[in-house]
Length: 223
Image (tube, rainbow, N blue to C red):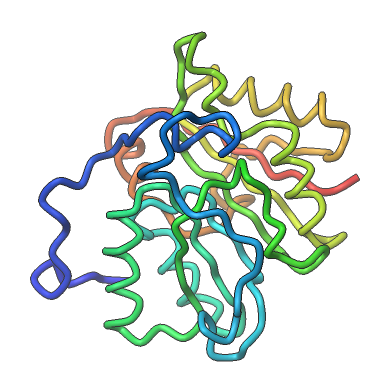
């Protein structure tokens, strides 16, 4: 989807990174002043015109380039972006409302606090694309790809559902594989071609292609 920068100007202080505590579970943080709200239930009719829950989750959707493009391809599905940066969510919400997009929405939330507001076996696809690598050892606990989150992905995915992962960081790719294997919940396939992936291109992927940076992709299915 082409976004009119004049109609939807980005916030002046839109940062790629945000407070590290936003990536930790609520019970582990000391300062929750700017922490995303905990969500127990969602009134889906307020988010999607067909009053149903999401078919696709884009975890860490950022400014929503992938989310919006993919939602245009499949108007019969509902697409939900999940993002921890409040300013990004506010901007993307403005685009969605301004363009009157009926099958896509975004929420300010941290997935490390579970997905209890989503019904079991109701989601067809989950995307976790180009997450912050948190490369330093002391920062590894801030990665959102952890056992409790994988258990939630497994719960909400349909039996035929798929979890899609992408990164340009080899160490993160290895971490994804090891975490999937350790969980015992998913089988996975390494994706080596665009034809196998067959999805819209994220802003990060455009940058990687332009600069000849390798991309590592995985598609996982429930065991």
